[in-house]
Length: 287
Ligand code: SF4
Ligand code: SF4
Image 1: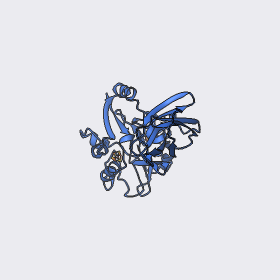
Image 2: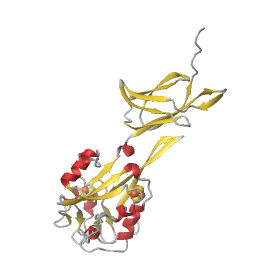
Image 3: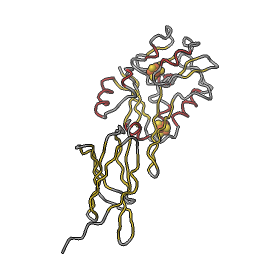
Image 4: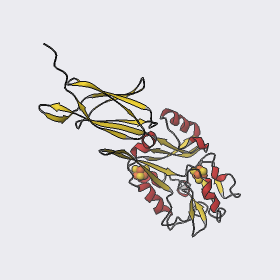
C-alpha cells in the first residue's frame, strides 16, 4: 500500500517560514478529535527551521534545515508509552492520541530528535501529526507543502519500494540514521547544512593596478586526492563546498596564464575564507 513520506530539499529552503506558519494556522485555536488537540500560540515549533551560520567575513552563509516529527517506522517514542497513547498508522503516520497521551510529560524526552512539545495548558505531549485529518479527507499534500514557494517541502504518497528506489536514485538521507528510528522524512542536499566550505579571493597586478583575478583555475587537493576544481568569478572569488571540517590538511593550486602558479596549504577546522591571495606576475624569460 502507499504510505506518506516527506522529501525536504535543504538547498531549496530559504527560511521563509511559510511551512511553520501554515502549521500554526492549522492547529492554533483548532482541535481535531482523534488527531490533535490545539497547538499553543507560543512556544511550540512543530515544524522548526534550524539555522547554521558558516564562514567568516567576507564569505558568510546561512544554511536552513526544516525539522519535524519524522513519523519513524521504529519510533522510540512508542516504546514504553502507555497503551494507545501513540500509534503508528498503516499509512506510516505516527499519531499522539490527544486523550490517552494526556498527563504524560515523560514522553517529551522519548524523541531523540527533540520534536515532541509539552502543552502545559492541556497537559499534553504534542507533535506535528502530518495533517492526517486533511489527508484522510482526500488531500494529496500537507499544508506545509502547499505553501512552500520553492518546493523544498514535498509530501510523497508512495509504496515503500518506490520510496526506497527514490532514496537510492536521488541519494536521499535521513537525520541521524544511527538512532535506528527509520524516519519517513527524507532529505536532499543534507550536506549543504552539515558540511563546510573554503573560499578565497584572488588578486594580482593588471595594467598597473591591483585587480580581482577572474577566470583563474583552482584545484582542491586532500593529500594525494584531487577533490574538485573551479574557476574564480568576476570578483576573483572561488569556493569549494561540502567538505569535512575534520582538521585535515587541504591544498589549493591556482593557475592562470598571466601569473605564476600558487599553492596554499591549510587545515580545515570550520568553514573559512583564505583571505586575499596575491598572484605574482610570471617572471620575464631571459633573452
Ligand atoms: S520523530 Fe520522535 S516523535 Fe516523531 S515518531 Fe520519531 S521518535 Fe516519535
Ligand atoms: S516553506 Fe519551504 S522554503 Fe520556506 S521555510 Fe519552509 S521548507 Fe523552507
